[in-house]
Image 1 (cartoon, rainbow, N blue to C red):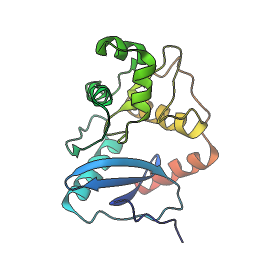
Image 2 (image 1 turned 60 degrees about the vertical axis):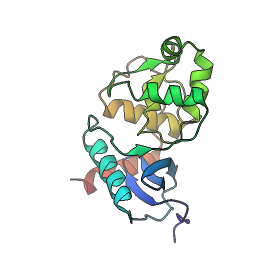
Image 3 (image 1 turned 45 degrees about the vertical axis):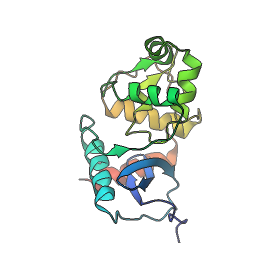
Image 4 (image 1 turned 90 degrees about the vertical axis):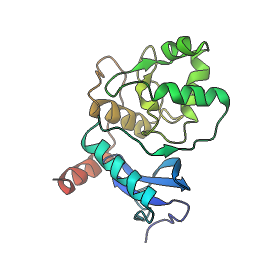
Length: 184
């Protein structure tokens, strides 16, 4: 029996593992990486179906745009950073410092705003990297988090050469193989 997924409007399987999506009305408010033991939960609303479809298209084609509404809650500065993230095209990266210079802020503040991004993938914080390597992802520097960031950047065609990248954990390798065969 899987872990409870009742706090999510839908839980879907992706190449990155299970994703839980919270909706409030017609907007996405949160996207979380979950364990594989979390039960899948189909979309029950039109908005949920749109989110599920747009995520599936993104995983098939990294240039597929997201048009679902996002209602992320944050400070005025976080909202400015999150808006700037959405202007970075797929396959491109910016350093925390470059984004900070554009926003008239500091790199650490930009990193903190990226860490608090509640709708990663849709608001692509993975496209922001450290000046000397990969940086973190979703506030983590552990192997799985960095692997997800590396996967997303590679999927989008970004040049990851020179970025510190983590080894792929064994269970993610197996999951990726399952996903590859199930989408064929």
